[in-house]
Length: 305
View 1 (cartoon, helix red, strand yellow):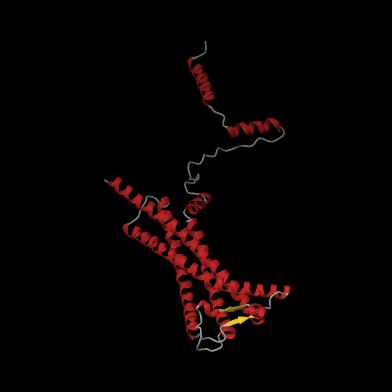
View 2 (cartoon, one colour):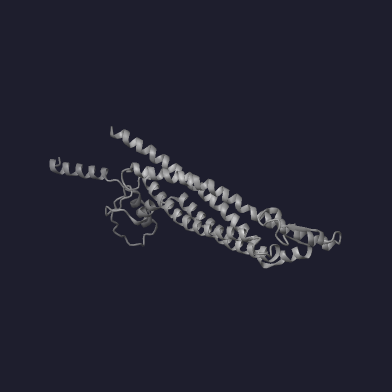
């Protein structure tokens, strides 16, 4: 019979062998050495598994930090800001140059007397100053809305610990919602107003095309086809000459000023439409963030009591 101590040692060795569990990496290493027996055995150290977003050193890794930062980006507000800046820049820049070209066309071909279009010149000059103000205001307003989007998105997703917000912060978010709705309605009017000069220039351009087609077919003389600018109400009825007919109208359509003004008004109208879409995106983003902030603040108050 074996001594009791040797029997106990054997039993402990058997139990330790039974408790030893072969992990998947160790199985892969053994399979590699079995397939390639010429390879030298290496000593592999066990690396502790990562738990959550914490690295073995107890701090967040670069990848986890990047994912957390990207989660706090208000993508809707970012897209709306880019679209708003692009739309306002197109509307203001192209509209300013197109208005200058329009005044030049009127002075040279439709209203040779300065007193006849003096009021129109003052209105166009005032509109150009308004364009400067619109560009400055929306540049600042877009940055503020983007910053507000970062704040509300971080608060909604609770990226910085516990959810914390104040009544003042919710009032500011509500004010931006209301102001964005007002600006959206106003820009719908601007978009409709910017389509008016496009319609006028399109009528002049289509009349010129009709004159060219009649001259080619030799059916009707082009001198009988005219465009009277006075009927649009931008110059008075006593303006001289007030209208252009036949070859004179065709020469106006062939000028560089007419071509540039026509296409710049189209681009300005497209810019106004892009700004309207950007404000609609702002409306949806700010309304959603405000609603979530208000709901979570009520939920937070209920948990305290």
